[in-house]
Length: 278
Image (cartoon, rainbow, N blue to C red; front, side, top):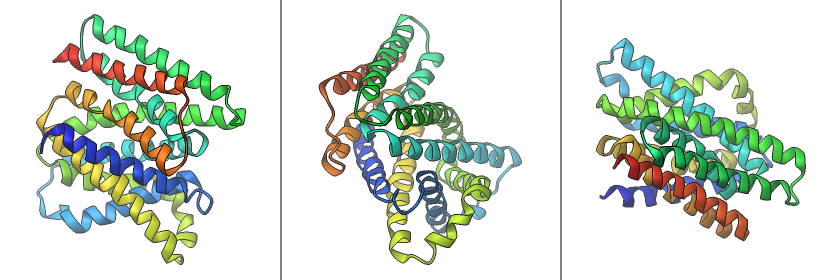
């Protein structure tokens, strides 16, 4: 299947899962939902891949664990962000991470210009959000959380390319998910008293894990083995539009024209960086 088609599938499942997760925030704190997404995804992947059958080196395990910890931190921060900001706005701002990766790994005026274009889009989105009816404290917390998620996303792309290039992408993803779940267990493990006795909540969390972690991250590993980092970045330009559509249809978060302009600027910045490498 062509890489763009894989990204359409990835984006739809990713943000459909995020929309389901938003509906769970009244029952379980947003960061805990993010952690359970990793835990259940790790369970599914371990059952599927059985990574212990592969012969691992210490270096491979270390890179996989680092990848998984960054991935887990990204999920927790992202869920805090969408608990306070509209889904489409949060996703667009988070795209500073991929833009930064493409800009740093490239050379020339396009990369420098892309940073300015992305910054303009983020300023526009943040300004619109600050002037909205969302409480100011929520906006500040949401923006800080999404900034952290963007930094983690940059690390995810860099580490993910290294892990995928080693030829054990999905198995390394599995090991990484387990490592990420264990690292954050001391913080969120107590929520098991709420989740485990509630089959309905556990089922919805499993849906979130499969839709937002298993399917898109497995597809990421497939795509990263086929294309370069910059090309991967341009393909992710499809995702803000996907998030806006899912947010509008599922969560009734209809974007304003200024928000759409900000989304367009961020997506354009990603396209600029990829063309510079192409």
